[in-house]
Image (cartoon, rainbow, N blue to C red; front, side, top):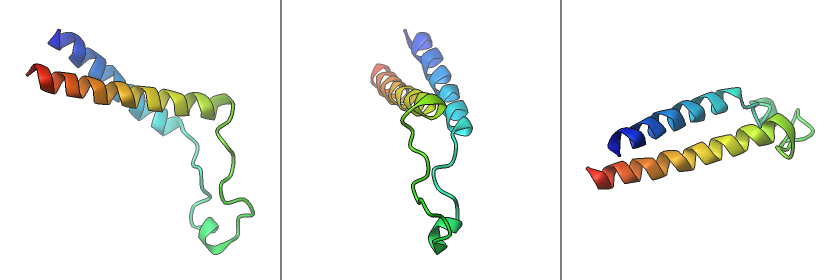
Length: 75
């Protein structure tokens, strides 16, 4: 049981890292502070790749937390 949870934990760690790396930045960097950007919030993650990556990150983050708690309880 412990080995299965460790495998799930490892997979969820990798998925969180990869999905976070592929996400587009939501802000325009320092340009949004000075007001050079007309739309501060940029694109919304309502469809397409952004929505998929956002959902994947949240789900794998929840799996990561749950498996970490389960492993702490088992030990």
